[in-house]
Length: 288
Length: 136
Image (cartoon, rainbow over all chains, first blue to last red; front, side, top):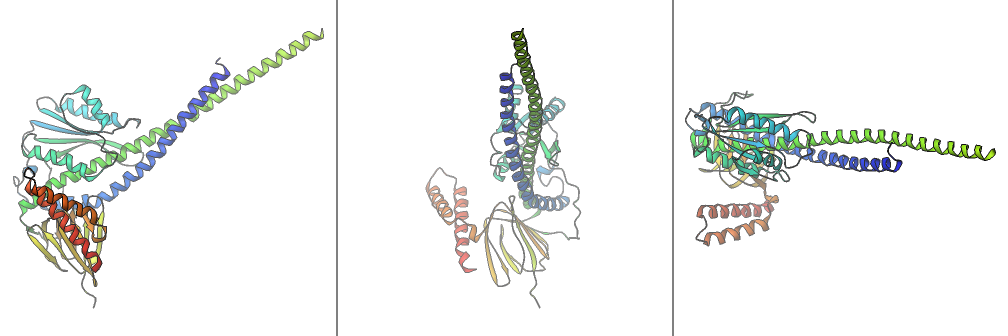
């Protein structure tokens, strides 16, 4: 049986850990709230963008813009969005598992290059693959639209130069506080969207300067908006995931403390009983 | 009878900057400034960096808006831009510094002329718009 002092020390240590996990949970909750607000604020723009695009793209003849025209996928780029930090449950692991699955299935016969967001993903993939072309580290601390512009412009440029034929993205969709789902999406070429049901019938626009010019500007913006959304959703998912993980850790710590306290009290009781018996025995011995 | 109105939304990726019922507006189209009154024909255009003006009742409002798009309908105008600042939000000191920097860049031989001119334009539009805040 461990000594009393030993148990006391363990209880103190677990309590310290619990304080840290509790603090981390609270920090994550605050960050999650901010991330959710950011998603909300980005929504009107993304929504409107999709609406306008679908209306324009429907009218556009295929071949009008290379970003809309699929070509044989010989060179594929995969954008993987992970977090900079760990201790978020299975968050990073889930994204990376999906990414590896994609690499295994699609990696044969095509030249595959990787774009990695987040330190955790970078460190993991660097050890396994040598085809990381771009990495974006430490962008979540102050996530802004400019970062999406950076990533998106690079991808669109390379696509237009035909250095890559398709771009896919693995990110974590934020469904709710309890549910986040890893998702694989095709980013380029842009798939003509399903018609967004418009409330009112609208005749076609007059385009200025022209359909082609408008589309040339609209599509890259659309890509960037998409990437921005993926970044925001991944960010919110990371915090939600960490919050859940830290909540579980705090609960586990409480359990461990309860168990240890029980052992401690038992040991203490045993020691007292032993002492009493010793005293009684001693007294008995003196009597005779 | 009340003056006719239409809905104006100015939206950036970060936030909704304006969402109001207005009477009249002008925006910096890439092919030139254009004005909108209620009942405008459907129209989709690219925007360049410039000044967006709208009138609500008797009050004029000014914004400096970045490149993007405008979707114009008979009763609704949606402006999708990278940046949009209302006149009183503009940081005049920052814009002045930006203009000084742009001037310097213009003199440099190794600096891209187009970029320097664009920087110059952005700074000047901001300063122009900021000046108008007093008039409202």
